[in-house]
Image 1 (cartoon, rainbow, N blue to C red):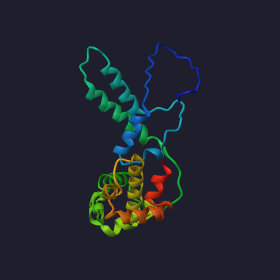
Image 2 (image 1 turned 90 degrees about the horizontal axis):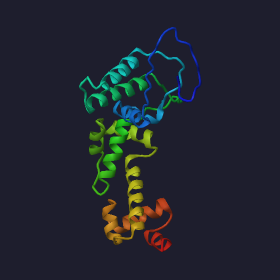
Image 3 (image 1 turned 45 degrees about the vertical axis):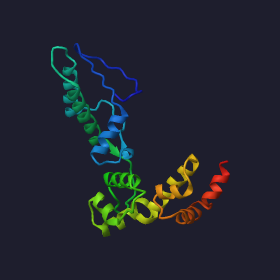
Image 4 (image 1 turned 180 degrees about the vertical axis):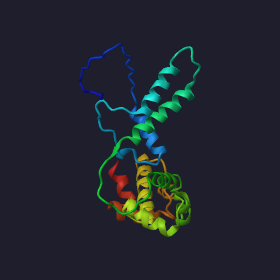
Length: 209
């Protein structure tokens, strides 16, 4: 029975009821491990749904709670993961219009993590293509379709955001902030911030005083 739905029924004999509560965070992690965007997974309420795999996992979980049956944390975590995967596989996805090919959820996550961790380095298309496990030419097309801009512009946007955050902290001189954010020099940072934010670093400093 879906959560929040009232109902009643009559049993012809004694019965056993097993209730399972599944954390949304568990389902999200399972979706990410399957390389599926968790925000696109929709678990629709289904009344009196029978699923042999879910029943099998549920009984295994119940058996593991028996004090006479040896089990450990890994046992329960494995079953919980299997349950989340089964829920995802039986769930619907948010409808979407036909779209151009984009980076997969896993590729997008790996690329954004790589870029954030290496903003202060001289990033190259070859390195980013290796992270996404695709060719450079393929990366250029899919990156634009996914982020709405070429890789170079995306990196500049992220560097400007990091520079702005460091400016707000007020702990570093402008020359050091430029290097920490990945700009070649202070004037390059100022030009990029002026173009994207409409203000210079000096103006941002005055505004926050």
